[in-house]
Length: 151
Image (cartoon, rainbow, N blue to C red; front, side, top):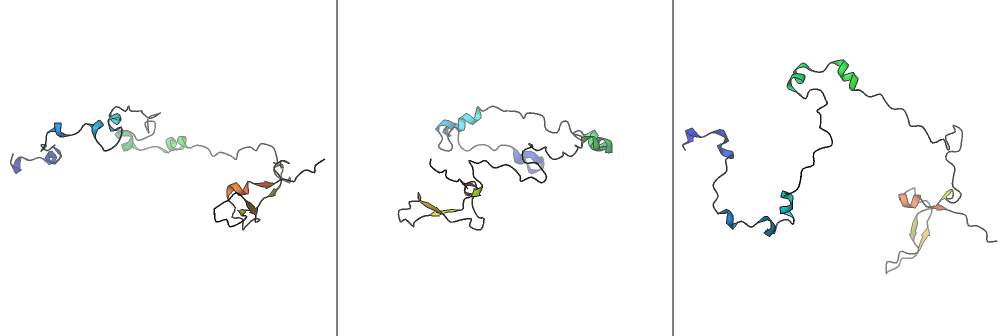
């Protein structure tokens, strides 16, 4: 084939192989990725619904004509109001949500190691107070419970 007979898609045509295909290892025998052969048998799971098939301008005719203002306004959703509260602690001049007596109202501070142990024993800790509000979520969730007097 001469250069004058060449087409633009000749670049993308498969080239003749230098070695025979029998010399190539099977996918199960290759060292690349495990379960590579299983990927060939994997099924296709289609999407739950077709994408954009119910929208405007999916065809050339709709794209050419454009979309009217009435059609665009019909797609608009009204704004949602704030969700209704659960009724507990929703009073305007109330004190907020009620506290559980077993949870306690006083927040515990940050925990720091009690001693600088060379063995890395972090079992013992002491409360160093609220340290510039930099407590983690777990530490902020800890509250102090008043101990009951023994009878």
